[in-house]
Every structure is written in structure tokens, then in C-alpha cells.
Image (cartoon, rainbow, N blue to C red; front, side):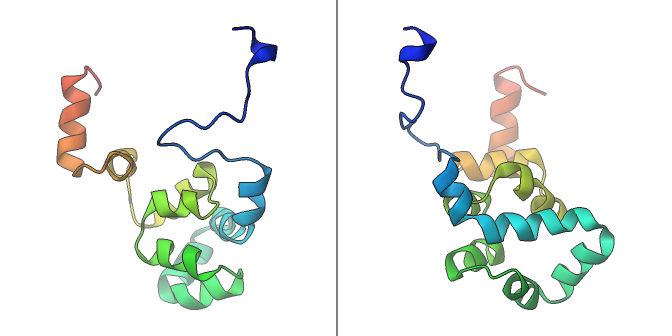
Length: 121
């Protein structure tokens, strides 16, 4: 198949396509996560009063609940972009393995073992 003939909006099972529609849906969530680049004070403000911080950025209830649950997949479904969500994950010291475990529905230990079994480190 030629690159120009490929439908770039073809759904891929198990993934959420981050396109313009999702960017608009997740604007508030991504803006909040981007604010964590502002330094330790911004991250601490979130930890001190997450509800007020989320309200400050206008998150909807779906986004707030995903944040409360620290559920990265739910945040992606709510319009979150993984590059911004990485800052959120860092606040709670969630590693790439933690997020990978969420994505696969496995425990962190089982996910790490899967990586080892497949030759990853």
C-alpha cells in the first residue's frame, strides 16, 4: 500500500487517536498537565488541593475522575495527550512500567516480567 493511499484515520484497536477533536476535548486537562512544567510549586499546589487545581483549569467530571483515580488510560480517553500526562504521572512517581501495566491491564510486576520475557529491560 502506498503511503498516500493509506487512511490515516483508520482506527487501531486498543488505541485512542489523538487528533484535533481529541485535542479540543482534552484542552483543559492538557493545559493543567502542562502547568506542571512551571516547577515544583505548581506540582505541590496540585498535591495540596487537587480539586481546586483541577477546577482552576476547568476540567470536566470525566477528566477529574481520571485524575483522582490516577488512571492514565482514562485520561487519554478524556482527551489527554501522553506527552502532557507524563508530567502528571511524575507527580505520583508513576513509571513507564506503571503506565504500561495500566495499558495492558496487568499488574506492574507481571508487566515487568513480560518485558523481561520478551527481551526488554
